[in-house]
Image 1 (spheres, rainbow, N blue to C red):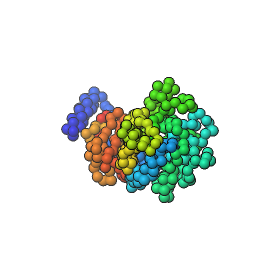
Image 2: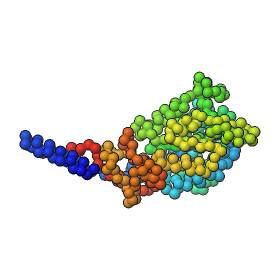
Image 3: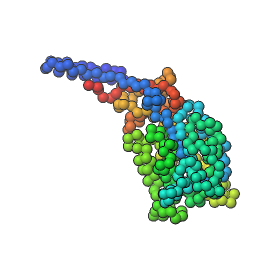
Image 4: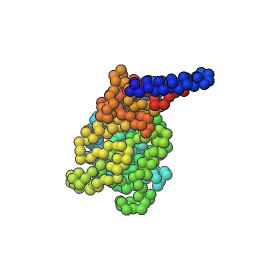
Length: 357
């Protein structure tokens, strides 16, 4: 590599000599090393993460909501350990009603529908946007995530997160420079469509495509400028065995295909309501942290010259527990045990492919 750089230097030096023989010039050519000292406050993208939970609050979801409460530490522990700056809020799978009723309060992430003053509404913590400074976070989350089981049986998870994100009341939740993580938890399929009538039909001509929600998230997060800065993870009924096991309580569940498809299209995690909730929530949190651990280089690098140092230790080029480079958007992404903490000092040095004039 260094011989390659030296040959380039010789070539440019020869060119300068030839030019000097023809005319006087003060121009010079140098191949300079680019070095940037990235600190969280200025450059580290994962310094902020906004997490929106969309919880199915229909009659069959009591056990699943309790499982989320019991295993919350598996989700939040790494955010706390590494001091991530997160916002977290909860809405329900009936927030879609806002699309058809401008006065509906169900898209407000206060807790989905607490402002309806309906007798079915569970108690609420009073903390509607949780963060790392929220006192007694475990109990606040436990209270907020228990959305009850008397919600609308027409569970449209996709349109619900869309309406919640669009709801002006929720402006305090979303930060433009934060990674957006949507987590959908439901034992039903999504049949979001353009009418208010109940119709669970894959052939419904009014059914919104899964891709349309990818397009919405691209626009909402300004992906054209910021790059992909979001994911959708799901915990659903993935197969017949899970559906039958859950439905032994008399409630009927549905195998979902659209929710896992959206997770695939957005690099999210696909979890099962029949699997260990602790393991699934840990996978989701690790995925969010990894997807948000991205650095943008100022110039195109010679890849074999990239050197990454975190808190004084050199990190290997490794897709499992190191870093990788994406040439399409000039980004360095961290993986596994090498994902830096929120307060880490990260230095990335490299030689650019182009010559500075």
